[in-house]
Image 1: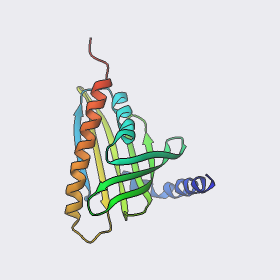
Image 2 (image 1 turned 90 degrees about the vertical axis):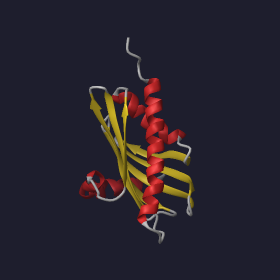
Image 3 (image 1 turned 120 degrees about the vertical axis):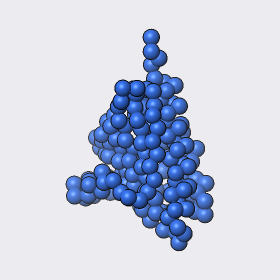
Image 4 (image 1 turned 180 degrees about the vertical axis):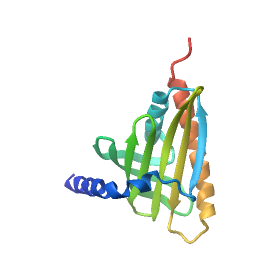
Length: 171
């Protein structure tokens, strides 16, 4: 527990100067987007539920939470060539708007970061997910991005289905 508190404190100090890295729009990585007929709160709740029910995760657990900053450990499964990978991520949440995440460490990956962005519109919400993953393996980034694109699209579709299922029905 002391170790995670120390790590979270160090991340908080570093993020004062590094927070721009959470919000930048990189030219690499993969982005997916879906239109959802549901209010932002239903989408926000569905995004948070997704990390507990994602079939690509063996587990996802909150290690520590301080306000809108979360230290999260996730174990990804069934990744081609890699197999399983455990990652410690720090998340910054802006409620009902966005979740930015950045990998702190991993037993397999070199780098991972991205964001979920919720934008309200007259018909509901546009939800986008952007991810950058560097496996550190010596194959083309296009192979990683192709794999990542399929995972992103599947996650977005699961969130859409969940949000529209729990959204209040129009009278």
